[in-house]
Image 1 (tube, rainbow, N blue to C red):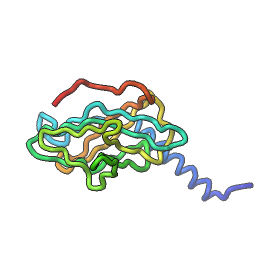
Image 2 (tube, rainbow, N blue to C red):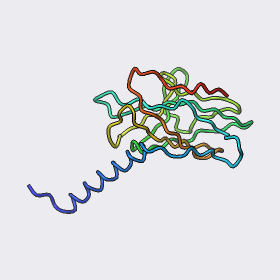
Image 3 (tube, one colour):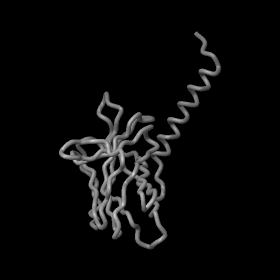
Image 4 (cartoon, rainbow, N blue to C red):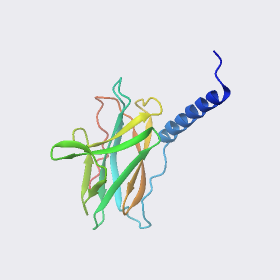
Length: 167
């Protein structure tokens, strides 16, 4: 059976777009401070991604956010080139829920996304995520603006990376 040329072209474009998204997600990018001051208003540490457990096509990203300012800030969204959708989930009243309106990080406070305590679901992956790869996450804050974080993909059961950083 011979496919019509427009169908072949459309399929090739989808393949290229998906591969470009995965590569963009796997290529380290500079971390933006979100401001012009010498001290970053938002500091993100201990970022990592766990690959999906087959047959799932959903990965999970975890990280810690420190708000170094005297003003509350809100993590409004997360995007990544590794998947079509990234959804922030947090615990509310003991239940994991999508944080549709973002999450407030209090002044001089911390948000910790960890197993059982919230995550970013990366859905509709553009390719396989394998331990040793890196995924870029763009975190957008109401005040600090966008911050790009490079998160290593680590195997299930592997120790969680830690920078040992504190506030």
